[in-house]
Image (tube, rainbow, N blue to C red; front, side, top):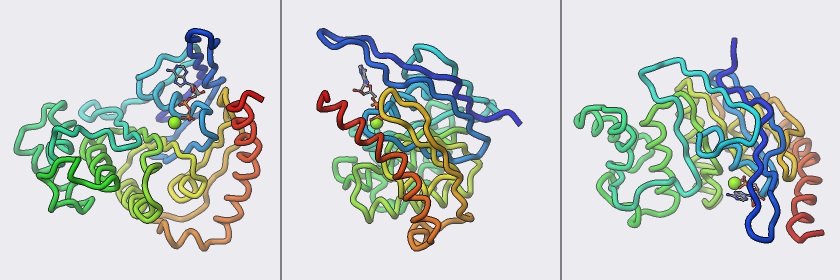
Length: 264
Ligand SMILES: Nc1ncnc2c1ncn2[C@@H]1O[C@H](COP(=O)(O)OP(=O)(O)O)[C@@H](O)[C@H]1O
Ligand SMILES: [Mg+2]
């Protein structure tokens, strides 16, 4: 079976600005993602994770290489993105935010509201359906971003550190929400995170990127059965073994990225 996402030798070089020369952010990444697979990408800060996801989302043109996203259902949107902070509109209520993508798809107003209410219920924000984002905590705003992506019901979900700014408890709860929703759907997900724990909790597979220019260095198949419980996994001996394996690779890259930052 053809992969759902094919990333074929993607390289991204940002042109230099002023005194700085060009920056090679992504240095030739190839990766196939199967239909319905949840792949997590971890890597040190500045290694090109966001850039790679932006290429997949069509927000950035690669310098070379090719991306193929296979469309299977012409009636559904192909991809949806969730970025850090939720990316929700401050001038819209929770309900309007969640319904927004459906409007773009030409769904009738009544159906939009019904679908939005369903997803608002799923993320436990019924009481806030008519509130504005500024009235919500960061964690609640992030839940709205998730609900909007699920309501949009795209075939491919591209997520860039969506839980990065949250406190540890909220993060665990949202990981659990994502697991439940994903396990019920047939979506293909690319999930970027700097957290090894998060990658192991969510992913079928974890891909480790090198320091900039980002390349794929290592890959781990995550053996935990589904449905998964984000909390129970932490006490599984395989979890700590895989954590150590990934950290073993990542550590050198984090050191390299930091040396690069201070100009060593
Ligand atoms: N628009 C841009 N112009 C120039 N350099 C950029 C731009 N966006 C990102 N970069 C640089 O590219 C590298 C990779 O950035 P990014 O993809 O955001 O990494 P990550 O998400 O892994 O932290 C960094 O060194 C960053 O400073
Ligand atoms: Mg990033």
